Image 1 (cartoon, one colour):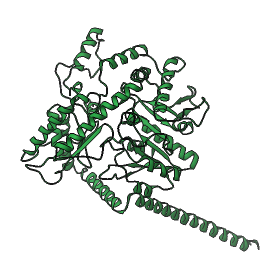
Image 2: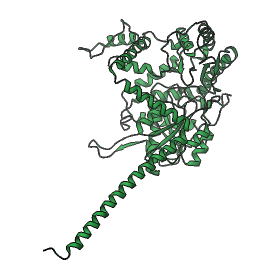
Image 3: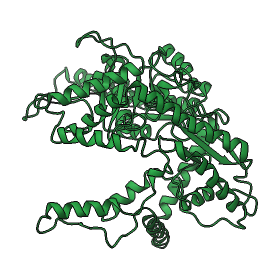
Length: 549
């Protein structure tokens, strides 16, 4: 016979079960509502940043890409596409990695080591492979000094520090000193207040890196980690001009940062500030401007970006990798300029490539911050490793101290007077090219109003049909290539550019003469010839890395 308390107990259990069930339902409903609201907010922010039309285009392109990927699953389609890709790859390899029967080839280790003389002979043959003659000033960028005197400086620096490694600062104190002085010289050049002592958190700070891409990566990592630590932002976003360097896209992929590309003004080539303003939201951690950008050499409105950064308490990075040691000297050289450095109050970091117009050896750049309080988030520190505390300021662990020595030697060898002279000559050469194209080439149009060393130009007939009289710009680039020039091909819009260097200074007249020949030859063509000079920056590196894969 049951206890008289059983009905009450049963009733209580039923109520409890109902309560648990209700609680589960409530949790489920709240979770669904949270996800719906979260995705709705994301959608609203995305629409606000990109606009309805751009979002629709992105959605359409994503659908097309998905459809194309699905089609590639079909064996017949995959074989056809792969055949076309293989053909293009072979053509590209013939163009940028031609076979030379006399060149030494070692795809596996030799069974017996070569003698010093054999190594020297092999290196000589490799250095003499057919290439664009950069010494004549016919290459856009790439080699920025090219003088024997600077080469001698590098060789001496490399020889004295050939085994050094800044990771072991106590073993190589000279490298540590040069490393710090490179950063200090750059901070001073970009008008950053220098720290008063080693513990001063408010003075400028920075580190050397292996190049502009690493400088940009480090800045983006620092802002991401800072936003997470100080503001609790776990879904960071950054806002960049459409013309900004592709390293920011790489950083977005590496570090999980959503990136908003803002269109540039068609005439000025500067980022559209109202669109930047509209894209800012609670997850924004960073605004970016270029001084100048790589495609067309325009300098963004850094002051306007600064006002937005200060108003919303955001980081503002100025990518001056290409402008490096030219932009700081524009005013002193008598050229027009615009505010771009740490004197603009909202600027919190600047990247500068010493291996471009700093005339230093390849593999050197500097990332600078307004204060150490930002730089500390760039660092990586592991304290629990059995090997001890492992701390590095950049992506690399070990680094070649010889590169730092060569960079330091370049900076002190050039000095302010050397850089001022280079600025006058290089920017002057760019101005002559701009003037020549605008005066004598009615078929072409210079993009924007170049202030520094890059001159980009497009065809006025692009997209208006082919045939006699038209000037497809990539065809012009191919013709210039056959005349010995190595220009950069651009897209959106289709264009070509030349980044002037010290070597370009004496080749301006040759450039304009050959450009006239190329344009005239293209105008006489009934139909454009097939071309593979599509705008693929660093295709050479990709081809080289895959030659033996």
